[in-house]
Amino acid sequence: MTGSSGFLGQRLCKRLSEEGHAVFEVPSKVCDLTKEADVCSKLPRDGKFDMIYHLAAWTRAGDFSLTHPGEQWVKNQQMNTNVLSWWKDCQPQAKMVTIGTSCSYDPQFELKEENYMKGTPVDSLFTYAMTKRMLYAGLLSLNKQYGLKYVCFVPSALYGPTYHTDGRQMQFIFDLARKIVRGKKFNERVVLWGDGYQRREIVHIDDFVAAMIALSSRENEIVNIGTGAESTIREFAGIICNKVGYDQNKIEYDTSRYVGAKSKCLDTGKMQQLLPGFKSTPMDVGIGQMVEWFVEREKA
Image (tube, rainbow, N blue to C red):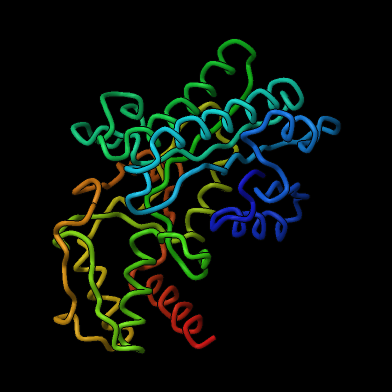
């Protein structure tokens, strides 16, 4: 598993290990996937794996994509090419499981799997979105020529307790929680980007992991994983404010800041058909778990 030290990777490793699988972890500190020499020397060439989870990507939240488009293109293309080449040469019997991005969809089309490669992604996220499309193109190409098997999952924004605390810009839902928790505890100003009416879909990390594992038997498919419903930033902020006892009227909105797409909600019809009866964590419960983690973190 590449990206095993990330938010998703840690949860997926834990779940797979609990189910009795032997997991070979490839955190970024151990192997630089952008370097072919590292991939050749540190990823196993002997022994046969059943599954390869390629979760690693070079990106960050916020306006990172606006200021690092060239680096994003080069680093992600290097990373994906090296991993797919290793897969073809050393582990062709394994199924490759990759993560796409909802950013790859052109918002003028429905966010259905058949539209993943159509149109043009939003300009501010274009480079990262296209590297994910190119990763998917790699899966299609290796399947077509060599018969290699794959499955690609496209998530909505992941959330839940625990997240990176290394000073990087956080995904929007974590940034909301951190700012509001600190606003309550330290009386800091709470300033959110945009007017608060941009809409987002979130899916609990444990739900996403459960769906991934349940659908890992699929072959040569792309599947959206989410709740199929979105809320405004103001609605998310309201739930968090209620959890911590912060006056939502104190929140300031900075309309000069970057907000990305105005709306981003996946069509989850295919997932619902493949996993009938799949239950998602209620948003109020999931956000409560996340807020509790932030509160405990601020006590440390």
